[in-house]
Length: 166
Length: 248
Image (cartoon, rainbow over all chains, first blue to last red; front, side, top):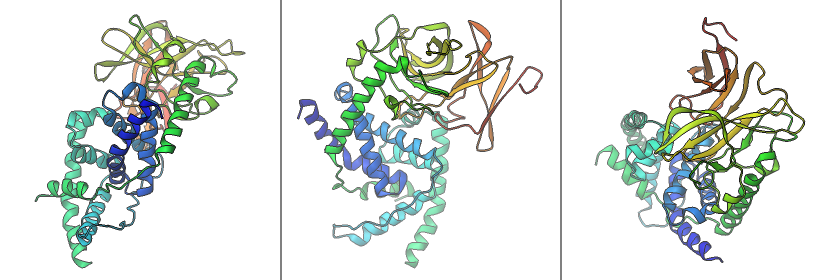
């Protein structure tokens, strides 16, 4: 394995879980999320000689988000909300409830809103950077973010009620 | 805990640290993609040859006085796919590309779209192209980025591959479907006295921004504000109107 390859493998091992999870938050589908993360890493590796000293994680994240956004421009736009996966930790009930709550509120958002929510609140990027990465204005990020949070607030009580009925 | 805090917590708490990807496949596919980029860069000049319909040509190299690093974000052909460009490419090919790629020289003045990618300006310009057996095709419209030092990076190039590149009406429309961090706003050109160009997407009308080509005032370069039409999103229709509102 070339020296650059070793560096990339180390990077990929460290970044995979977060990229997959971000993709899952944006798609609601584990298989699609793994495919998207893998695509992002393939493209990152293809450009590795140029970027590995730079912000490789940022490059992979941007590639992932753009790849998913490209996918949403195609006809299939639903949020499949995959099954709740098995949990290995002891607090299974809490994890399952949290995941259900998360899925239910993300399902209420449009693809663009989910992308903005994930970039803003999962990756903790500032609004200006979210705007750059999605090639939209800061105003669009602010307004979409605000709209998304409104939806979350309105969706949350219903979700809590649903949980209570389970 | 308010809703936002709960959301942040939930997004982090549901991470699966054991998520494992097949890194052997990643490395193998990454090498293939890298090879395709090299081939596409070296062969883009002749990519249009032999295709029977409109293509979006894979971008070629950088040009400019400062010898800026090689090209960025390219898009795949819309149709008439060449085997060299079967996949969406993104961002800059490896530095080894520098000696292989062409340097398309702008014909006439650059058109500044007003769109910025960091410090770079999104610009459009015509470049010379040659399509064997098609003497009526000599120009293609490029989307590129101009750095503050004046150097130019070509991202996409669209050109006619059959007939005349100056025939009246719409010509190719460039959709940037790459995964670039700086996608080119949808663009194209129209030949005729258009003063307004309107695209339709999802039942919504979007006005394009227009600029006449400095070398031929019959040629109208147009592009769509990325805030109104997401780069890569396909238009359902497009029309041009003259100064009196007549459809051309």
